[in-house]
Length: 368
Image (cartoon, rainbow, N blue to C red; front, side, top):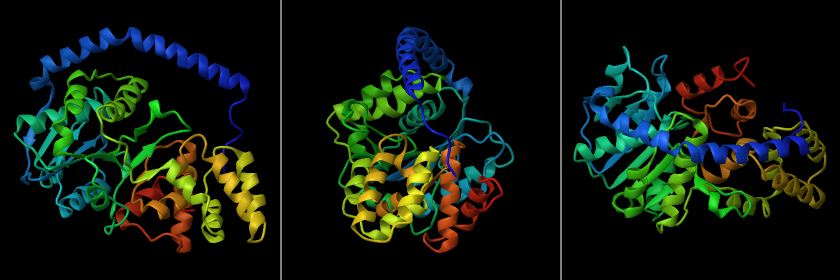
């Protein structure tokens, strides 16, 4: 299943016009956003509810941002349990009021804050860092993540351990760089690991001191996800993710027939033409012609969008990824359908039952 063809020249021109328009309006909104941020800070103690949980924080803390106004999902409690098992004590920031399930979250956390959904995830991260400082917590490692993903898919995930062992004081699970646009490179905002040294750096301190909250998602993306990474990179912290587009494409260049074939088989496309091209390539026998066409196809299909949505099986196997995105964009839903196909076929290890149930429920008809 795929979406229909992508943007034509008119669509691309309109997108560029909108981009320029947003640049102007965003520049004009700096003063209003600064005022809104200051007003929020002035009434911070009245705007939030901070409660102490049953856990005691130590050298590893997980700042976990939640937004689940309909109630805390079972997978979220499983994630908190997993973090505790890895030695990371949760500091939970909820951008929605917690109801009957507050006790379950408090039992698994050092602190739980309920706050307005002002500023989305980066607004919550900012408040979480404030709690960290005000409570005198100075962990060696701070894991920052949010509930836009199911994590972990399996208890035996190695993502956290590999990030700690990487030697990088500031890194994300997913490093995004399209083409040669280094000035726009960034970590995807749902999974960071920050060392004590990085948190004490001028780059980290100055970024969060000056961060302007906004409830416009586009501005959160620019100032938050992209702005945070860019500020840290400019401060001397080299990009270092578990996964990256370039590392994926480097592997594609030397991958064998079996990996290429399964990567194509479980692909989730945003354009029908790419899916049809993939089908024609899969009809070829193994050999040089198949490999050449498969590699060229994957390179082109990875040029835009999110390569690890398009080729989730290949990225998950190559990089040892143990998370799944929750967003309801059509391609991402199709990616989850293909993930379920791979699990059913035995080409990916089955996830935890609680994760499997929620992933199935997120896909129309529930199963591949």
